[in-house]
Length: 430
Image (cartoon, rainbow, N blue to C red; front, side, top):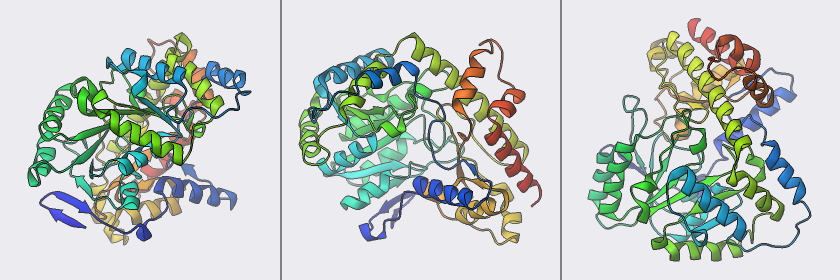
């Protein structure tokens, strides 16, 4: 690891690579459950909601498709994705500039393989960004953020990095609403980041997989301000509840056509094409409609009410936490409890989370897994351990003008509600 002021650079061997933290915590939780333990699974970031019925029906109706599709993706689906971004993000995307992959995770890996440049990520960041660069031997630069800035990248920090070596090829990843922090960017900040990126010819990978889960339905893409240098990443896993379907999308500007073509060639030599029935069904998802819009209205409403309730309970327990603005994550800072934690031999975020799991059954991930310093007492809470289908059904019968109160949360998000209570009780007993 190499430091330049507040900037952190990472160069490690692939042999140092550990299993993905989000996958690992899910495996550990399941193993404990099989052993008879009660575990509250706030580790894996998986949508709790079912795939919309109309999209499931589209998959059923297209199950007979068995032929290989083009490596770039089904043309009709690429057209639907282009319409999706035009409608939702006010960004002109041509179907010829859309690439369909088996999840945006693999598309990100192929992007780094196709483009020889440094990876730049603000921390905290999703657990797989840096390891993918590590596998490929690409330098990784972690850019610092802080609680006071809502864990968001400041344009001047990106400018500082670019000034260290002007002209160096770089890909900067912006993920918003964010995993692991649940926060997003204001349009004014996106404009300023776009100005820095344009000045230094930085490629922006805008990971907008949670865009449709902005709690107020007001997601804004940086591609509006930097269309010539932004690749938009999306997919079905989060807003459509279809993580296991493994379908992701990259939408390129025409100026990066050659890069996309290289990725298509790589796709043809690796996964060939995404499952044909899934691609045909995905057209229905991206085309949307009244049923899907109402599904999203209720999903956002539940996630916002639950996330804000948890944030309030944590604050009551002396924990610093930014209120969520989208998705289903919180990134609390437990540093106010540092002295009492230290008295119990807990000095790192990993030790804290391990002890909490052992003593309360609440499983969540330490901040170190998201690029934060080991001794920083931060963590990610993925507040999705509840029956999403049941919660949606209840939300639909509750008038949109009526807030979803604690009684609703306790009844329909019971496991996450109980996990929060147990965590706060544990903190209170320190």
